[in-house]
Amino acid sequence: MSDYLESERLVLRQFTAEDAHLLIELDSDPAVMRFLTGGEPSLPDDLVRDEVIPSLLAAYERWNGRFGLFAAYEKATGAFIGWFCLRPERSGPLDVVELGYRLRRDAWGKGYATELSTALVDKGFSELGVSTVWGETMASNVASQRVMEKVGMSVVESIPTPDDMQGVEGADRGGFRFEISREQWARR
Image (cartoon, rainbow, N blue to C red; front, side):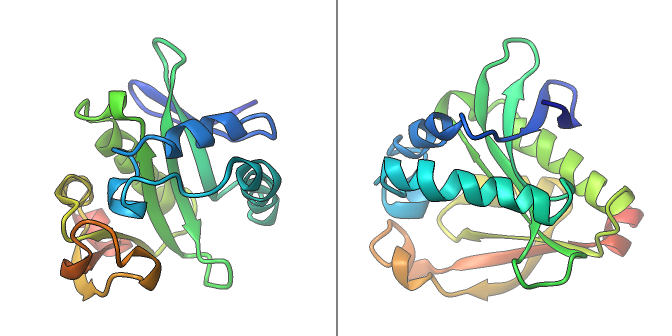
């Protein structure tokens, strides 16, 4: 499997059909899922195997491996630390892409989210013809907001909490959409 992107300490690779257990384990940690589902696993294990993984693999084909959701590993240990995405909306333009990430708890606080997010934003603007990178997070998820700020993104609007997240801690506060344009990135 070839690498999609490398940073100083980390590497991103495409997920494979055999990687469902990585997503299942990640989404089974209540702390990881705190701001997404209130701590509950996001999907039953069989749906991850039968629908999520095939959807990820189809996205790599749809976008010729340029965009998608990628597995992140430490270079030094080979340990899976979570995932990162850089991808357009399914029916959206290819030059407006979402930045996202979800990390295992033991990878928190090490600067990994900022390191790979910066590398992804750089790749999007310098190699992939991206004009805008955006991300969304809940108002109560300050750690995620800090990552987006560190990569040069800024809040462009407040957003309501999605209906399926109403029971999540902090849902009453809504969230934020962050963005960075190619022009803003070039001035950094």
